[in-house]
Image 1 (cartoon, rainbow, N blue to C red):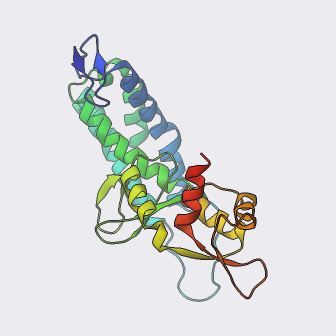
Image 2: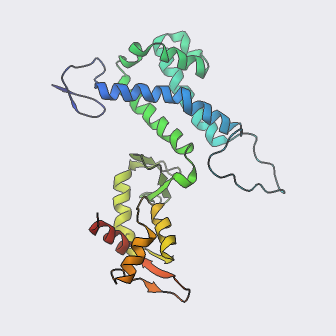
Image 3: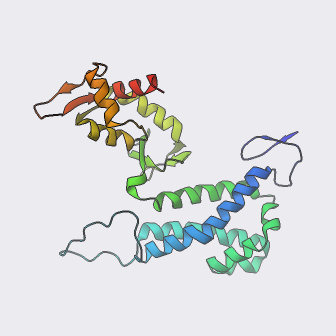
Length: 250
């Protein structure tokens, strides 16, 4: 019995490209998503016809902003290069197609694409591109703080579903769960000054979920040793203590 090259689950029947049925389905869905959703959305952002999240204040003085979004342009270039490469594997002439025609060529040749001997590597490459696109297309308020980059210390934020994270500064890449674990170990060293509702919101940004009512109850029952400040309803909280309480109640 062989293993899938992506998820390493055993396969009864060995496919030419060593991808299991589940991974083949996910791979195809990712290809469809790239051309049907991600690239059109990124192009709108690049041309500043759309934006992600809450519009920022535009100053009325100083230099005018660039007419295009450079970050979106880079993501588009990587996405289009991937499509061109895959289309070129179907027929060499297809590599010169624009991104939409290349995508249509790929969509029209499902069997060929899924049975490419390079499909496992192509899937891995597309997965990396797709995650970067997804992160760019996710409103900032929907991102969660998972910790900091172990190499350069840059704050790490990702979508809640992300499995890996790439540092935008030093390009270090690692697993989200490992980064979160390191962050959680350091929470005992971190304090947050504010009201229960404020600390609950702050923790939610780190994908740590508790309610302000829970925090108030723990304070009332003496289970949290937060220090009151001179402002009414405000405390200095130890974040590690709150997460420990959550672990006890989960």
